[in-house]
Image (cartoon, rainbow, N blue to C red; front, side, top):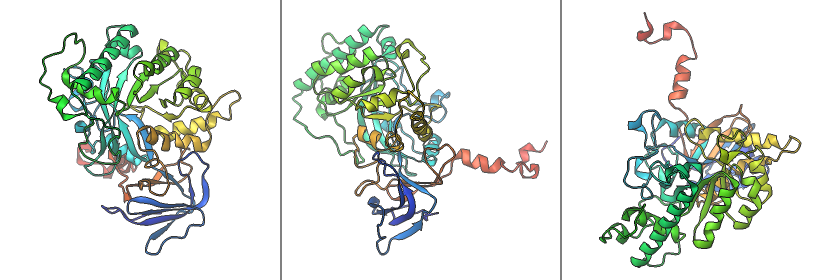
Length: 447
């Protein structure tokens, strides 16, 4: 099937397909998806295609919302091993919490192109912590083939409080937590001195632009360096004001069960924190406490080979057990060789896990939700992305089979109602060299 690609949103419908809405429900057979004005207009069975809307026969195809990749490094590098092309971390920077990935994101990066080819339409992008426990501010992006990738800059702050954070803080978790609390207290005091007016609402998560969630007066504060400073510049303190006031989510990377509980305890001292736990290899051990706190988790699907002492209790059933306890869990993070396009494979493995006696996995619908609607919701786009429902963005992926099977692949990717190109350096190289007739080789091979 094919919908002609245009440079702008178009109205069209896919009929007769197996449709999964991404909300956790089971797929629907012989269903229809209608996209109008760049948004989902209708989804379900027995839906009539409106007059003037192009209908495409999706018989034998599967239709899902675009994949939403949670915590990626998309657009931050061209070649990981080439420092000049790598903007993931800033180990020599005088700043940490104030670092903002948005200006560095390159939508033409092949990593973005290959992810789009794999059905990923939106993602959160986070920096790495290198000089401090604070990595900086991440962004929400779409993967459309245009120059406007960033849909929400400064969408969250990222901090390391496990083994990695301990190393960045002087070699101990005690130091990491002392530095962290000192930073939040400084930010709280800094915001109070600046008399920031009340701001109860967050920026529109769908809006592009420079909607900086920091009072401009803070970054320009001309006070001398504050007494007792051990971590923050004024700009870093300004960046943490929205965090301590609960206007910017705080993503905290921890793996060990005791570290997770320590993070949850932060809410007693800083009740306005909007926490998201990243990692949580031992989350299943404290799943009830995480659920009771209402804190969402971004966890890898099949982590069961501990690479450090903080992951000794890791198990493939981690995600399934947390889900059973009522924790909102998305699959992630994705970085380096752990590419976002592998998300359907990880989700499918969690479905297969339900067939193993004693193991805990996810239903098919839950697994798809873990790579679509749930990461979108954690990113502040609940009901707007990662789901096929009226009013949501027109991010639609048409697959040639069950998307959670490794043998299936996208045949059409649509973002905001715009059909996207499905070619990359990888696909072009495949086409170039699949025919081994030496007469077709470039002249350079003639020797």
